[in-house]
Image (cartoon, rainbow, N blue to C red; front, side):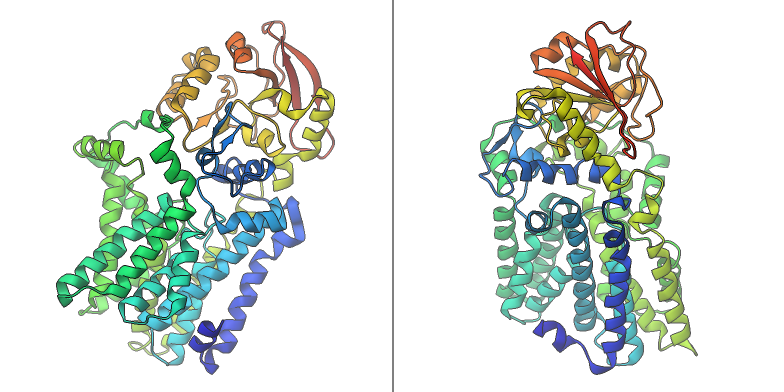
Length: 555
């Protein structure tokens, strides 16, 4: 708090207070609507949120890295469910699932605001003129409200991290820098943004050695602090990689090579639109302003050049990673280091808005009535970002409450009337995360890494269905993170298929029973005349509940 107060000048207080108020207003719908709020489903409710629920239900949030979670896929390592010990889990434990999600989102927005504000005021826009002050606050507010899908600080925590490292680089050795670095490691993912940030920081470290002919030991200490903190916070992941000799299904990941045209299109798409897991929403106002800056300014400082070059080069890498001439080499690297090397794009939002701040600061000294132009750009960009509010974008999809439909699945438990850990289920036409969230033991699920042997075992159950649809077959065989009980007749749409029906579900039910499967939760009726291995127990369709569940018993 002392650090923040020291950075704020008296003239900035009104705009800072206004920005805090806007952030609160932005999140107000989540609190007013409660679980009736619309929340992103893809890679969120269908996975990340359910993974947290599995951890909490199994008292495994901060358990030993060797822990096996038996609730899903017949037992998988802790690292397959949730590979980190992070701050978000504490928030979930305190506030529960829905409000834990909301509080985490609110918290990382404030982290994003203050991190960006301190970074700009200290290292990029230190001027005391009023335009610079408003630019810093405005850019920080816009950045804080970008619609990132995650409830952790993979992206929104980056300004704070760079603020701390640039302090160390400039011989500011205060303890708060190391506290910021440590907290970032416990509130972010090493494989999403952490390792790529470490690479950039390492290059800065080496560059300084070459330039200054000496080692910046404080900066090195920061790198060591971040690395050690990541080793601790990612202990389940590190333990699994080093000591659990379990071959991951990821070894079968495969993407077909692409030609130059597709690679170039992918580059342009990322450069203009960003990546949906790390939204920057920069196309309409940020890029045009940068081109004005580029055309009107002949002497960019080295930092601006490097940041822009980084965005261009990593966009090229993102687009060309599967280019047929490069793909064999990239595949060789990822076979040794099983990460998605293109994820440098998680740093793009931070860099786009630093560039916008610098460009607007330049503009403030170049044209008459510059304040009107600058404030207009900031307000328009803010409005554009708010338009992408999660609750607004997902308003036509099931709400948080509807998606998990706890009342419906409480009724399912009553109908089955057995200890929930004494039987296993699969879901057809429903994300398995729904059953997992409600405490059921599932044979299916969505996990970013799980044992390859299990993928092959589960494939035997759905093999005939996969053979009836080449696209489903490729999706499962070449990706497989969604280890789902696919139905050819329903396809991959797991939200809007409630009125469909399944004529023939061509599963190997004998093998399904061998895996422990006893019940099927289906979103659609299954023709029992053509499916003699199952029997309808009950159709559970409660008023005001989203899912109409057809509960089948496997004979």
